Every structure is written in C-alpha cells, then in structure tokens.
Image (cartoon, rainbow, N blue to C red; front, top):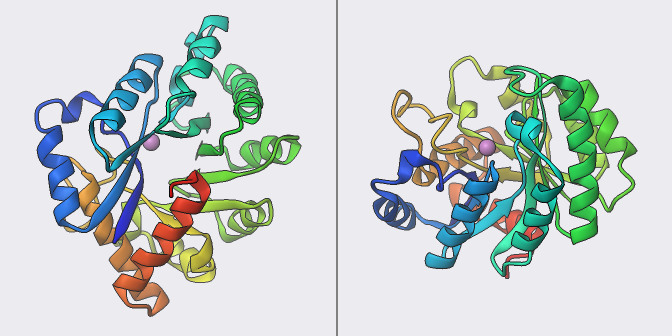
Length: 254
Ligand code: NI
C-alpha cells in the first residue's frame, strides 16, 4: 500500500475524469491521496472532493504564487475551512523564488503569517521551497510554533535535508527522483532514513519516468516508491508500508 502525500486533484486538469483517476490510484495500491488546495477557491474544492471520496484527505492554505492576493478575510475563511473533518494539514506555504509570481518580500511576510496561523489552528504544515533554501530554513528556524510537518518536493542538498530532519520535519520525494539527471537527489535520498521519507506525485505536475510528457496522477506514486526501493535496497512493499506509516503519523490519519 502507498499514500500519495501531495497531489492537486482539485485542479481543472482533473475535472473531466477525477473518478477514473481516483479509481486507477486504488487499483495501483494507493490507499490514500492528500490533495492540496492552493487558492481559496481550490481549497473549498479540495474539501468537497475529500468529502466525496473516502480515500482523499485535504490540505488548505495559500500557495506562495498567490500570496499577493491575501487579505484579512482570506485567513478568516481558511480558519473556517480548517475545521472540516478531512482537513489534515495547513499548506502548501513557503517561498518560490523561481517563478516569483508574488513579490519576494510579500512571500516572506505571508509565509511567516501562515506558519503562525497553522500553529493557532493546531495543524501540521506542508512547506513549498523552490530556489529559496536559505530563506526557507531561516524562517522555519525562527518559527516559534510546534514544528510538525513536511518539506514537500524536496530540492535542497543533504545539508539542508539534515537541518529539516533535525527540526523534526519529514521530507517528501516527488517523481523527479526517476529522472536520469537526478543523481544528486538519489544520493541524498540514500542518506535520509526511510523513517523520515514520504512519497508524492504533485499531480498534475512532475510526471515520473517513463510517463514523462503526460499529465501526472496519483497512481504514479508507485514509480517513485520503486526508485526509492532500489536506492535503499528494500522491497517495494516495505517502502510503501513505511512511507505510508510516516504519512499517517504526520497528518494524523488513523
Ligand atoms: Ni504542490
């Protein structure tokens, strides 16, 4: 069994065949999918999908791309949404200095505020860090809240991974680990204890080899787990079992 710890099932890319996508995941051995709303509208949609499908859980928060649109009402709405039974974390929040769709200073300010909000609500966090490793670590270190959560789609070096682990975070690995050029990521994963790893698809993005070029979907998380099994020299089943346990632990899924 496997859990896709990070997908975006609420995105329009899945409007036409969401049922089939969720069924295919089940058939591939993916027991649960955690879907991450990135805007206020998508958070609402993520919750309604989680309410419809037993195997789906939801995460709410504003993605760094859209934080320029946050106002006081945004946080009030998110607080309300977070009360829903199937909401298991707050996120994805953080910094994206690759695309810079919101100004960097705004991203930094809103990241801090959303960490505080997560503490107040009492949910673990899902962290997004793209080309902002130093700033992300600095903000996480300064965060006074209970550091519980996941650094999703990990793209830092081993030194950063070690710092995240020391702070108590889990590290989630996407399908990029199957890419030929990802030797560095495979080396890092080789050194991170399996007890700290999660697997994810980030669907509809980051489709793993050999399906690159197509839309990604949660069933493909098995390809990522298989690559990790090869790196670790563990049976695939064992990687599925342990990463699922880790995912359940951090999200409080029973
Ligand atoms: Ni994502």
